[in-house]
Image 1 (cartoon, helix red, strand yellow):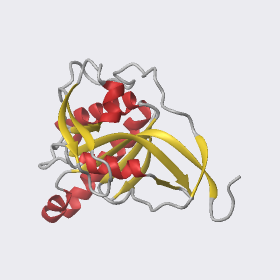
Image 2 (tube, rainbow, N blue to C red):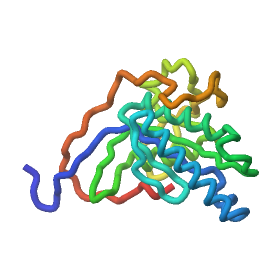
Image 3 (cartoon, rainbow, N blue to C red):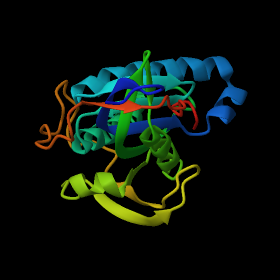
Image 4 (tube, one colour):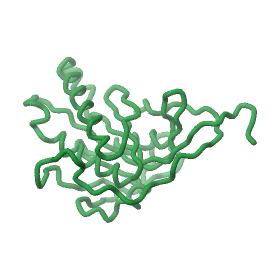
Length: 216
């Protein structure tokens, strides 16, 4: 039995999606009010789309979004659909400078405590997204193991990367996919639900962790 300074909290293994606006500071400098409007519009769209793939938005810090999914396949399907939809000019109603996101995906433990989400995986997903091109997606090797057979995507190794504040090197893959739809989007997900699920929620006694979700 664990006692003393340790406390019993819930830990869950999840597929973690970290999406961040490309060139956010430049956009704010050029048109602060317009950028806030477009950011709000994109966040509203993302929140609606996440649920189609069984996920949930757990944090929005400035221009970043953190979402958790029950499987890496569903996380990838969401990320591809998000990039496709946000590349559609009709989403932006003719805005001169649409917002573009970069996305990173990994698999890792997340810990919920006092309404906040913690975990090294969130920090890792943030570092991985910084390697993506605008409107692009990068994934960790831990994700590629689940999704390597996806027919709509191919995966290009960027080699093992030394990520800031991550002890071990991580092999990162860029996801190659078509930004345009073969047919108009419908309300239901375009992909079949993934059969695999990563581990269910469990309990773990741990020391309090530093919140890294807001550290881009």
